[in-house]
Amino acid sequence: METTDRATTNVAGSVTGNMLAGGHEQVSWFADPGVGLRAVVGIHSTALGPALGGIRFWHYRRDEDALADVLRLSAAMTMKAAVAGLDQGGGKTVVLWDDPKAVRSEAFLQSLGRAVEALGGRYVAAEDVGASQADMDGIAGETAWVTGVDPARGGSGDPSPVTAYGVLHGMRAACEEAFGSPALAGRRVVIQGAGHVGARLARLLMDDGARVAVADIDPSRAAATGAEVLDADGALTAECDVLAPCALGAVLNVDSIARLRTNVVCGAANNQLADDAAADALAGRSIVYAPDFVVNAGGIINIAHEWAAGGYSSERAHAAAARIEATTRGVFELARHEGVNPAKAAAELGRRRIERDGQGRPYLPGEPSLMREALLARRERFR
Image (cartoon, rainbow, N blue to C red; front, side, top):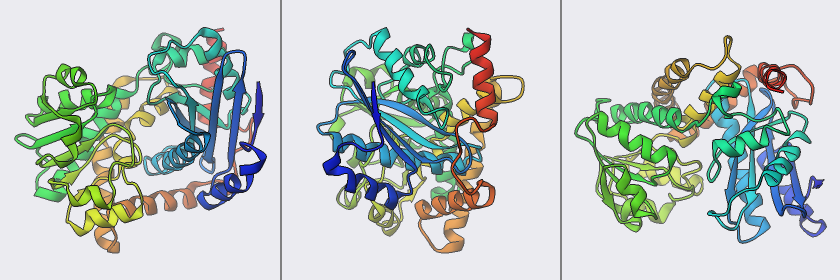
């Protein structure tokens, strides 16, 4: 296996330039010809503690696309952890994975686990798009720095139920902002994406009395939710009270926002806004935007309970995720007070938390943290 902090010599300037511009601490590329591993890990900030972030398996046309994704996603993880009040930073791994139906071998996951181990605990892996608990279990054979493993091994398992639960509560705050009431009963909600989180969110919303429609590139997945099925291409322009992007990011830009027919945008997808102009465009149309990294924090809140006193508890994790409603309400209050859009208000909350509680320098391998000690103890128990 080989690792380097820059992709290739000829793009080193752009890589480090983008890192400086985004405030990133480290980018590491990994390749293992024996198993075909190609991956990049981005550590954005460890000011609050070790960087936590999911492993995403995805097809990227170019290495530059994978790098852009890892820089964008790791920065969002920093804000997500900070606003959620967690003592951890932001990181991300993307694995260049061409065939989504291909089976990952034990040797492949072991190699990926050794890549995570090589970072010495500055980065802790979790589940993301294209990944599963089985992947986390395979990685855990080589490193302690992984979360979301089998609950029988002291992990929290699949984070999607708590993520969806947190989005539900964030949506209630957004509806209160838009309509004067947090009630979801009778509201028409369009969900774009019927993956693990989107499908669970659909069921929670229907249980709450919402009128739910789901769109997915695989219509059978949308149909499996029991909700109304929409054409995948029409989700963003469907008339609704709430639009919930729950697939990939960057779906909201100035052009697509001009075609929206909704009062609220609140969903689970990371990095829903293509750029800063998108947040201004939503505000310009008086569409209430619940910042994605605020409302979808249930997953990392769930993971954080793996190192809570007494060990992981699903009940405590759900109770903590429910507080996303109050956090989202606080974002709207700050936005009104400061005269800015909610995306800027949420980012300001994150920056204030890092300035107040951050250690003022990067976290170093081997330094104590609740996360580190809990994961090391788990490894010793299950060896």
